[in-house]
Length: 521
Image (tube, rainbow, N blue to C red):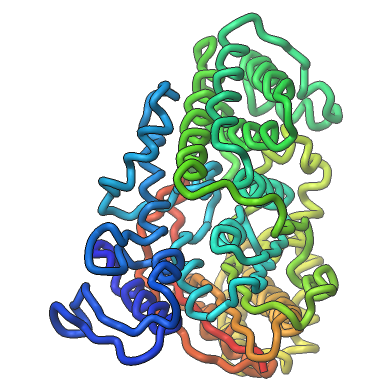
């Protein structure tokens, strides 16, 4: 077993091994709760274990039996290279001789775009194993975010489908899956082409001027004129690449630097302006650093682990509440759903991604507010909409478990006893809307799953202060109770030690998360 994993991951490691094998599991170097070496009877060849396990270092009698997961994670080290040297692929091949003994989350395409609230890929792989998803099985994530579940499902050979209401999320998830089918040599080759184009006379296609006037004016409020010019030059260079898949890959790299070169405070979730001056060429330099790192990591992974055949996935810009209708052809056929729902009164997803959404032409600024209102966990409402949500809650509160209603009622009561700002006044109504929305998602998930199929929800809990009283919103318990009322079997709820967040939103990390395992009737 890996010696650097968290206690809850150790539990998952034991569970995934038991799911893939038969017979007793025997610890060989100490008691069960501390041992790192185990003996068990494999169902098939040990190669299948090496290929499938998430939290294990090796299978067999020596380190020649390193798991594919360890080798995959080792390829993330290649991103530390300063350039694509002639010996690049030789260095990639050498990585497995000295794999890192530390947590690696950004292997394959997992790390090519920052995304708030994403969960880590080893968890997905372990849950696929625990659910005993067949090798030709189907995995769905109806709230796919940047595509962690989809990428990991593709790497295990499963067919996978993802939905998300955020156009940037759907775009990033799609390109992450698509890039796994790129030929490894194409990435250093096209990076060199981009570098040459940006080092020489640049094309200026005025990309941002092809957008609506409203969007153009908005971008001018958040980017210096010289920055927009450089972004357009980079965009023009990307468009000269030969294939759509490579253009998409480097467009994702461009999106990933937009926030850092804008006038938005880089580590702030809210929209706050901080005017900074960038030197000439700094935007292109940051893009090339990002592009080189991403291209090197993905090329190293494909070189080590192989190029996937195209297809085997579908990403749709759609509402999780409508997933049963959107994915009707696979209703009743899905082996596992693995998803991380938004938190109650969630992060401002559309606002957080607004610069990429506008610059890339994915969602015009005039449509942001209406799209945001549709997002599950939305926290921005007018007084009229709040009253509508509350009226709906009062009429249909019997749809929710009693304990869920008690929390909503308590928050409403306390916030009405003292002067409260609009966010606190909105909270009870928004919370009721969140649980009604998640109820609809669970109904759709149930319709998608085959009989006995598993659904895993990685859920963050929340808390608020109402009338001076600290209220814990145990989202995982409420969702489990809702699922139970719908007919799911609640198999278990596993607590997770939160890993330190590695992205720019780490200050907003939720203090506790749980994995809810449900089973369709």
